[in-house]
Image 1 (spheres, rainbow, N blue to C red):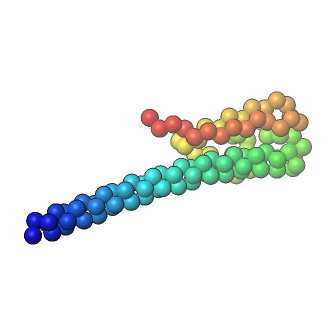
Image 2 (image 1 turned 180 degrees about the horizontal axis):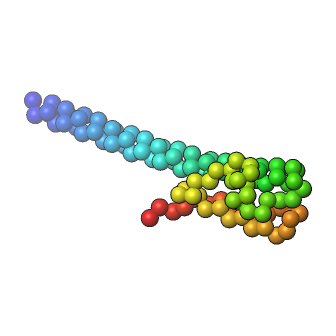
Length: 106
């Protein structure tokens, strides 16, 4: 009788260990997926800005002078709570340097 109790206890303990491992794995997978989505959104934002920059150049013959100009004239929308955009102009006919970074939460 005592052996049966010990065996049942071990089975229940094993089930809890397996469930704990599965939950930890699920948590890690969810976090990895969330990071991947954030990275994709960041890349999408940068591609949109580059596309608007090239559209401006093709339409007007010069690169846009600022991000604000693209927001006003080319429909770019930047969530400034989430992203910082570095837009460095080197001349009207030189492609600007564009870097989009995610803001760190405090």
